[in-house]
Image (cartoon, rainbow over all chains, first blue to last red; front, side, top):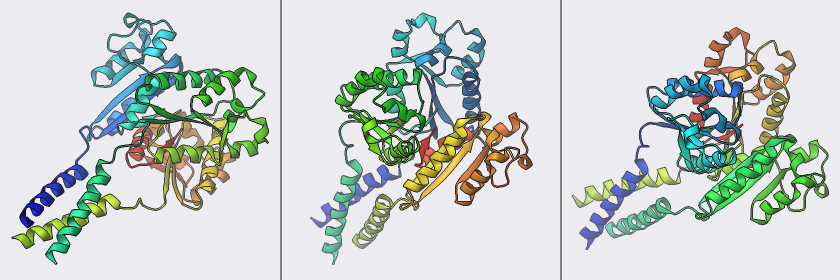
Length: 140
Length: 140
Length: 140
């Protein structure tokens, strides 16, 4: 009896300690950005901020998603060829560039209007909430 | 002596495991919004963002608070009749619309100047911090 | 053998319980602010918001950092004498005023161009992420 309790206690301890001391999943830093501006310097700032952060976190690793919603959806439209190279480089380096489907409906934007490296989320604000709930930092 | 330690260990384990595995309180999603713009498209965006998020989280349930402070207090003033119907609908669906009392003092706004469905908080920024401390996501 | 397990179990319990029930470090509230605006009412708002929050949290205590990056770095330049007194008062009350070194390089700002009470961080956005990872609330 005593033995059984001891074994159960030891097992439970292992589980608890494992659960408590569990290291966060790699990469260490997870950050979601919001882009809601229709144009202008906010676009250049976004790219500079993501690049600077990736550099600062190069050693630890980082997982980054940018959510484009409201008038900010505009930045992901194929027609904005001036942004294409920079955004493509971010996407190729592993940054998720997510278009809000609510904004797509509102502005009548189709999948084929978006850069091919863009992904989609059902709701930009819901996505920001979900990421924060999952422990991601949020930057606007 | 051994027995006592075992019992204490078992009880402590139960407490620890209970604490660790505790499920989060329903509703699942809790989000605090900031509204600081004195007028313009930010007002429409706010309402659209809250509505879109509520829809996206309809299945899981969501608790939402919007904190109006600084020049954003303006949106809760009774005189803005164009906003009344939409804000009232949000309030009636359970969204808390909170006016910052620091902003009320600064702009000399009285309780009777606010929509009757508005609530109040001592400090808008402190409220945003408290909500995040309590695990709410933050969206600006 | 039994004794050893018991001792190990007891020690582990103490560690686990200590880890789980550990009270958050004083002060109770920790908040990081973002300042990215090059000028205008956002500067006055920032100071008002920090002061109001410090007042609201006076009883519990608060640790506050403001991160100045992008065009917002401008607010920490010595030449902005109109801001000096208010910022100095914040700094002397324990608020950290941190200049982004990426912005410093971009705008060719040297340490001697900054108010002497300003500190520096390698990357403003990385700093915002690190603080949130450490449990700080974020306000923009």
